[in-house]
Image (cartoon, rainbow, N blue to C red; front, side):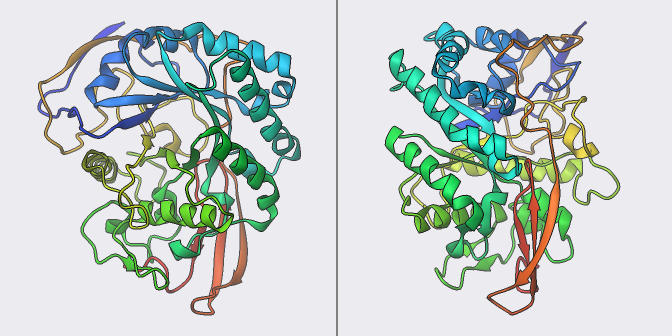
Length: 405
């Protein structure tokens, strides 16, 4: 089925800053990859992150100049401990598409350390090493980096940002990974979602603060830095955590962030208007090349989640409504920013997802689970609720002093 997707009046601008977009495909009604290329270009995106190494996508984007992060799913980590299998995977899923398709990074698993799965955790670092060794053997290590994406739930403390620290039980797992990233000049990836913080505590968290709207913000009492949005506070908490282990120079990239345009009745804040504000303001910030208070001169490297609404994702309704685009290629909502010329594109739906290649698919970002622990707040003495949330949900720490309106 072919439909014309007309971007009347909106349209997405071609930005000065470098925009990244997550291209998930857990759906049976998405356009064919060839027809996704103009959609990516219409939002000014120059970087795409996949959760697998879909050959259809990598072929479609050949010679476009778009940079790609490809993913090795959690389900393949144990297999990739074998150097021969790792080299076979790299040959099939990376080398075969270079240099026409600009693959610059491989993510090994997704949010592995917060799944509380010993097998996955034990396989993560060896898999990263094996894939990197394969790249070295093939002469690709200078152009393709190896890393892994983390949930904010790896943090033990996230407020104030200057006190950010990793969970004590994960330091032993994280430290060798950080050392590997530093030695291979690879970025530290974090998935950060202010939406989940607001949904969990809408009475105490300012909606304007999480949507990049004008607000009085907060001041970090230790650093004296002023924060006018939660995402920057989350990013700087990660910077502090890295610095506490001696890795202050490690670059931090935001591998996922976004806001759903629709949700279940109990998912407060999941509205079309809020999604428009969050993503529209986020794109403006990226365009301004504005750094965080702790790293003001460092460009943000952010991948928005996501390109499409994905109708087959499990979980609450919000999970199926993060897309900037509907499956027919039309915008899910206006981002409220002036565009260039109107864009039109023919999109052909694929009907059902193509069968994944044996070693490329990833379902590592599907699951969401939560646990709650209580501890005293060092700032005010109140009980501090720490929500340990997996998948794309941050580690939230709330007390009466935190994230006030």
